[in-house]
Each structure stands twice: as structure tokens, then as C-alpha cells.
Image (cartoon, rainbow, N blue to C red; front, side, top):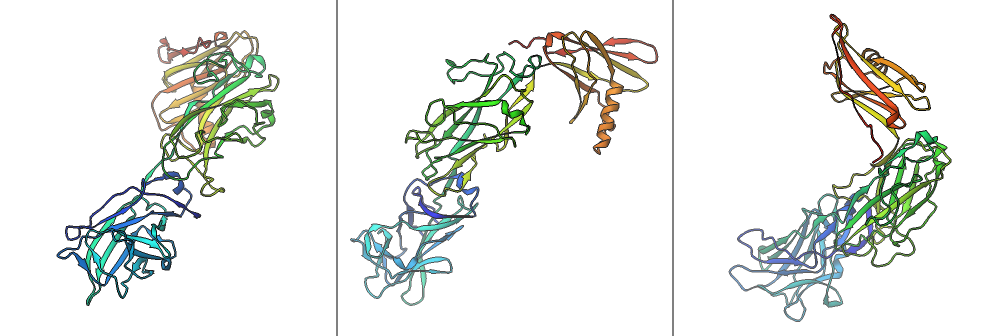
Amino acid sequence: MTINKTTAVSLAASTLLSGALFAGTLTTSGTGLVAEEIFQGATDLNVSIGAVSYAPTIGGSTSVNGATFKYSITGGTFAGTANTLRVVDASDNNTVVSGLGQVVNGNLVFSSIATGNTVYSDRKYEIRTVGDENNTANIPVTVQKGTVNGMTVCAELYSTSGTEVKVDEACNQPYSLAPQYNVYCETKLNNLINVENAATAFVATKHGALLTTDGTGGDVMNVLSDVLRFTVEKTAVDYGLDGNGSILSISADNNTSAFDVMITDTHNFASGTGNNDGFTILANGTSELNVTDAETTLTDAFYGLGASKTTYTVQLDVNGTGTIPETVFKGNFYIQNNSVDTNTTYTPAATSYEADSVIGEWTNFAYIAQIPAVSYAPGVTKVNMYITNRSCSPVTPTVKLIRGGEISTVTLDAINPDTQAKTTIDALVGKAMLAAANAGNDLTGNQLPFAVEITIPGNAEDFYVGAQMINISNGANKDLPVYNTSERSN
């Protein structure tokens, strides 16, 4: 994609000598930093290398007659109209010393003129626009994607009196890339669903976060809301990547109508105030939040070329009557670059941000028992696991068998209140093997013991899990350690 609008990018003055034989200098104006994000969607980019100033050092002489200037670009091409440009002697009242520019084999060439074409050592020669020779000209170029850091601009000076001879050369590498935006996740949409209250609210724990970053507002015990907080850090890269109109996109893996339990959001985006823009998660599980609004000012974090660091908060509220589903949230932050192309967005380039990354989960409040090592040795040992339900409702445990990089999940039958159920490692592995075989996988190759994790939705104090390993040949037995979430109120 070509970004058609040419935007002036001024570049840091720097000099790269091509060798000991030539000692001239080539400089361009400005800072030299280009926002890395702008190269994500572009196959090439039209920019400007600013004002070009060339001071030749002519070896063995102080001047040369019949001079030709040749400017070349490695990793880019000249994008302007060459025949509107010519070279002037900026050290001598902008005296014109060349004919009109031409593009020859990709080079910008200025040939000698009949008179007044003496070029002197250490004077400054600049490219100017015809009819405006008293002012510097910004030279437009097209940079290919991926070459901006290695793009080299060179000026060569030739004597054309008789046989053409190159008498000087000077180069520089004007561009360097830098990410303009960093995005950090401060607080995820993590909350525990209270399954003992028909899953219509969250558990009143400190699992969530305060609404305000300084800890003076909001309520971590609020059972009808959850908070997402992220920080956008903007560097002062001198490119018109203003970010005005940037978007935070939140998606969820649950696409059922249960999302109508979402009723409002509250956020303090660019206006700095909390408001409700009618944010709802749609039936397809996706919604977008505009990061800036009509109250945008020059001091906002997404606007202008100054550095800034701002933290933003999104609060999702539920209505307390609909069932809250277990949900995984993902987020994308898109930079809307209005000054270059209003139809293009750019993902932050910084390594601290990963596109389409998980920004939180809503999971059922649960008791989780962990048994670190359970031997699976049919005919040699057996392991019995006992689960007691002391709550007032039936519960359905899920068991994860973890071995190496493999995780297999097995769902047990429901356990009624005031009832103890028994399962064995042989039965669990058998179910897991069957599921794995149906999926084309194999659980039999790894002889390491399993780590077992048993999850039961509900209040941790209502459940008990024990495990015992028995030697089949002699009946000897030992209890296995069980680690569990016996306290979830903090």
C-alpha cells in the first residue's frame, strides 16, 4: 500500500564519508526519527529528506569548472518533479550553478550550464526550487518498506571539462526507526463469578482493582463491575503520527446472548472524565471503544508530537440479574493516523505489546485442589481420589491431568450435597486417553507421573479432596499431599 500524502519528515544532520579520497559533507535538516508503526501497512512511503546541503572538498584543487551534481538513494527513489529543481551556491547569494534536474537511472542529476558553473571547495551547495532560489527546498523521496534504516543518500561531484571524472562524494544515512507508542496492561478484566448466587454477580474479593490508578476511588468489593486499565506511552518522534481517533478493541470468546448482562461501561479516555458511550459487547463477542472523543485537546496523550504517558480505565458493569458466562477477553490497540491516512490504523510496534493478547478472564469462583505427582502404573499401584461436597448445591468437578506439555481435561459426574464421590487415576487416564484418541493424540508415550488439578465451582470451604496410593501386591498405602485454595476471601 502506498501512502499517497507526502508528509515532511525532517532528519538529523549526519555525515558518512565514503572513503579517504573524498572528504565532502552531505547534511539534511531535522531529527531523523521516523515512527516505526507507519511501516506496518505500507509497501512504500512518500516522505521528505528536507533541505539537502552539500559541501564538496575537491582534492588537489579549490574549484572545478563544468561540474555535474549527481544525487543517489539506496533503498529509495526520488519522488518529486526533477525539472523544477536546480542547484545554487548558498555561500554566494544563491547563485545558480546547474541546469534543471533530471532523473537518470534513478539518480537525480544536475548538469553543468554554459556559464557560472564554477564549483568551489567547502562552499555549501543546495537544491532549490526554480523561481524560489532564495529558500531551501524539501526534497521528496519514496522509501521502500524495510529499508528506512539502511537508506543512504549520496552526493557526487563530477568534472565534465573533457573526460568526466568524479572529484568528490559524500553520503549520509538520514533515517532511523523508533516506536512512537508503547501500550502496557496495568489491570486485566479478571474476576470470579459467584456460582452460589446463580452466577449473576462476582465474588466480593480483592481479586479486582480500584477504578482510579491512585487508589482513592472505586470499590474492589463491587460485585457488579470489573475494571480494565492500560497505559499508553507516546514518545516525541517527529512524525505526524498523531493517533487522534485511536481505538481500543475488546473481543470475547463467548458469543452467546448472555452478554446482554453488560449494561454500561465507564472510562476516562482523552476527555479525562468518566462517561457512558453505550459500550456493549455484541452478539459476535466484539466491540470497539473510541479512545478519543469530541473533547480532544492538544494536551491529550494521543495528539501532537510531544511525549506523554497516560493511563486509561474501562469499567464493565453487569445488571445483577443475567447469568455471567465464563469468558476470555482479548484486546487490540489501533493507532489512527489521521495526519497521513484516515483509513489506516497501525498496531503499536513496541515489544511490550502483543496484538490480540489476552486482557483477562471471568472464571467461576472455585475450589482448586492440586496433587503434584500421581503415579499411573496399572497392575502395580492404584490411586484413589475422594471428593466431598458439603455445599447446598450439586457440583460438577473438572480434572486436569498435566504431564510434560500435555494437559487433558476430564469432567466428572455431578456430586450431590453432603455426598462423597470416588474416582481413580486409572479411570481418569482412561477417559483422557479416549478423548485424546478421538482427537488423534496419544497419552501413552510419556512415563512421567501426572500432576492432577481438581476444580470445583463454589465456596472453597465447602469441599474436601483426599488422595491415597496403594501398592497392589502387598496392600501398602500412603496418603498423597493435596494443596488447595482453602481461603479465597483475600
